[in-house]
Image (cartoon, rainbow, N blue to C red; front, side, top):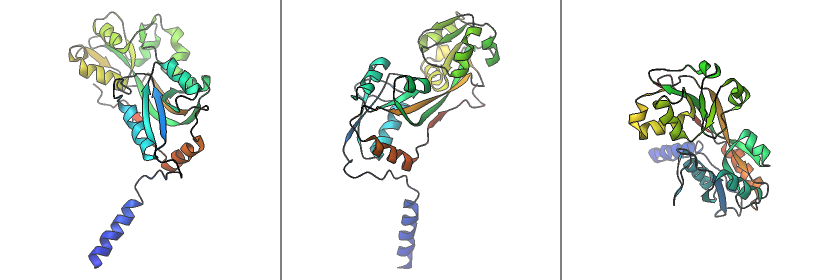
Length: 245
């Protein structure tokens, strides 16, 4: 009998430390539409969208009792859908974007370091980026530090991430900017290019992506905020490690 009481006591104690969303009455089973533009490996499109952020958002919203539908759209279409209420949340909004498009912040969902790629035989320290070297962007926002200083770089060419990798590997560019997780995924997928790529050991900039809600959504956003306040979700952190190279 004593052993049974101890087991029950342990189960009760353990349950106190489990995350609980505390479903609001009448919300279980309501569908919530979450959207983002394709951004591998964070967001990958297809019949069943996936990726680091997609998995995170699905698990979070499901824990609140919602049915979750992920819609992957080009960025402008995703924002337009959020502004008119067809999409309830955008889960990859960056600081300036959410404010500019009239979305509301909820919490940071991803904190990601941006690295400087260069050729292995001609490695560039991050401070050389600002010494009038050629830098490449991928059409994404690379943080306030970069945006405020981009005039110090001779050439800024906006291309996709794979093109950055190929141009740096073939020395058609001095260096390129890319998020650490994206760079890791590309180098793993293309080892022949990865073998000649050097990644900076310190970040060029750190970006934060937010879970932002649509003010035009037909869902009760107060309930979602209550869930978030109680669950206190921790953002994913993609940081550079000392042993990068």
